[in-house]
Amino acid sequence: MKTKISGLLTVCLCLYLIACKSPTNPSDSTTSVFLPKSGEWTSAISIGRFDFTVSSDSTGIAKILVYFSKTSGSVSTTREPPWPITNRGFKIETTFSGAQWTFEGTFADSGDKASGTWKFVAVNTESGSWQASPKS
Image (cartoon, rainbow, N blue to C red; front, side, top):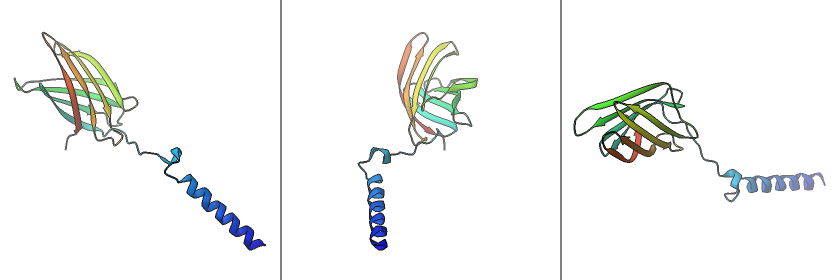
């Protein structure tokens, strides 16, 4: 009798574990989400290049740098505390070097890719999208 109960408990436990690990069980569909990689990131944009620096604790954007391909010039700005990264995303609206800039972006769950949009308003308006990765 003891063997039958023990065997039955083993079967029930196995069925429970199989059901909990079933691919159709939504609670088992976890994906690893990583913080954005800290350090310098880079992205090609239509007017040149957009670089930014993710803070050492991966919770903010500390620096923005824009390179202009036509003039080989650049402009940059920093902020302390950094512009926040919230729910894997950021929106930066700032004025520097005589222009109004907007940068919006979202980091991939992997923490090593980001994409978004940018806009520059001065004498003329330029805008576009970007895809970035950490500098090697």
